[in-house]
Structures are given as structure tokens and as C-alpha cells.
Length: 57
Image (tube, rainbow, N blue to C red):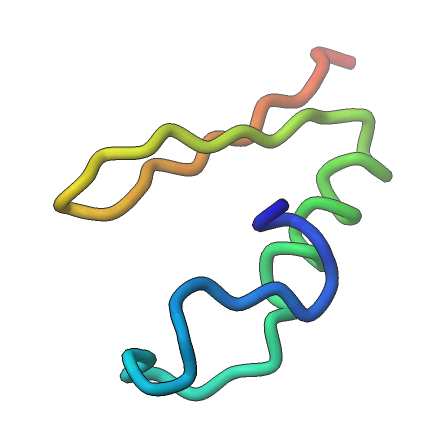
């Protein structure tokens, strides 16, 4: 779900950072266009780790 367009975590009252919710969607599309894959691992309460892998050419 976090890779969907305009998705923003949390509620408007608790958000500290502004944004459109397009960043991860754009990154996912770019990675996939290059033949790669993107993933996320939850590391609460510290945040998340994002990984991207690409095929060897």
C-alpha cells in the first residue's frame, strides 16, 4: 500500500512532514522500468529499510 499514489502514513494531525505521497510510487515505477524489484522491511520504532535489486546485464 505504501507504494500507491498519494498514500501518506499516519493521520493529518500527527504528520510532521509535508508531501504529496508520490515519492515511493515514482521510485517503484522507475525501479520496475529498469527490470528491478523494490521492497520494504519494517523496523519499528526506528522506521523502515527500503531495498532495490536490479538484474545483471
